[in-house]
Amino acid sequence: MASNPSAISVFTFGAKGDNKTDDTKAIQAAIDEGYKTGAVVFFPDASYRVSQLVLRQGSVLQGVSSGTYPDNATIAGSSVLVRIANSNKHVLLAPDGANYCRIRDLAIDGNKNNNSKGCGLYIADGAKGQEAQIFVDRCYFHTNPESNVYLGRNRRANTVQNSVLNYSLTGDGITVAGSDNTIAGNIIGSNARAGICLGTTATQNWGASSPANSAAIAHVNDNDIYNNLVGIAVANGSSGCMISGNGIDRNKYQGITVYSGASNSLVTNSLHSNGTAKNNTYAHIDVGPGVIEVCISNNNFTPQDSDVTNKASYCVYIAPGATRVIGDIGCTDPTTSIAKTNAQAGAVPGMALSLVGAVIQGAGSDILALKNKAGKVVYRVTESGSVVQSSIAGVSVTGMEGATAGARFVGGTKSGPPTSGTWAAGDFAIDQTGKIWIFNGAKWVTGGSDAAG
Image (cartoon, rainbow, N blue to C red; front, side):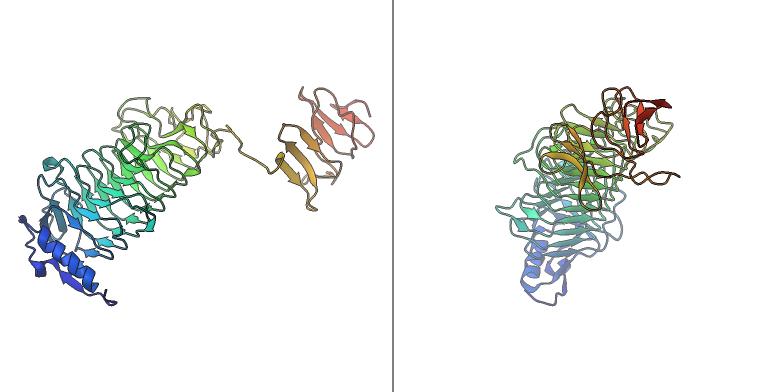
């Protein structure tokens, strides 16, 4: 391939762009020539009727503008690919091995009223792992019969950004079946299933597709996701997905669902007006019973839009059986009656969601160990739950006039002061009745009374 790419127009290869002629062969010839010479394939502003275009390794497709609105193929000054009626194929197909492609400033009209199958862009599953690195920028995928964009298994490191993905007939705005993909800065709305589905396995609301693949290490950030069945669905077994900074609203069911998996994080998202299909049935964030670990923190749950009647059940719902659900609920509107989690009713900003499972876990036989600056263990909780206190000065009390360096919490008893150990003046203990005992250097005292020394 040439090292200094030039541009070739699809008109040069016979494309008409009149929204009537089948331009598939002409445009495919331009794509094949671009593969041979390294040239960028340029689409002047026009509407091109096609059945399926097959990308080659390194293909670069460049339009003038994707247009975006209104939702048809007659927007002046835009480059539009329109699926021919009854072709039932993916408009853009990236076969196994066709990697390193770039698609910019194109609209893909799926013509879902006259087709029953096909995605706008379909990056096919790979037989083995590969860095696909297919980059989509400033495009408009709409009205495709299946998902607007499909990112295949074993085709890693794809990016879809600054695009619009709306109105799929039966699928998602974007379906992710592989790993290490980035979905950022898009507008994704009014799709039949999820705005973004991470994985093709089962979710809370639909079963697995065939083939069923999990997603991993997906970067989903700064998207506007609205009016889908579900905003973002993390499907069964998907893990390491980072979902942050998204605006998620007006989805018919949940805003975000996490079916199972581990090490997913949902942070700094803004959610409102979800659960529009049925009042008090769906949560803004729904965590399934098979979740091993998820971090939910600093999300913003804002007031409903004035024209939305139905409310979500909870800000966050955690199904029985989920473990290691950690984080803070984040900000909630104080006037919202459903500003809570099912784990902690009435949860307020800064309150932990759940302490199910090991939130703090140490190495070896200790769950938690505190050390002083010399590296000596002064306090530890063992695997069996026992609390062990060392005899050396450990956690000091500072910031109060008259506090001594030896003052430390030495543990608790069932009732009364400790009866064995070595203590310094200022040491204190709290027994199970709630009394605080302080060692004055000679004996333990509480509430002004003397006790055993």
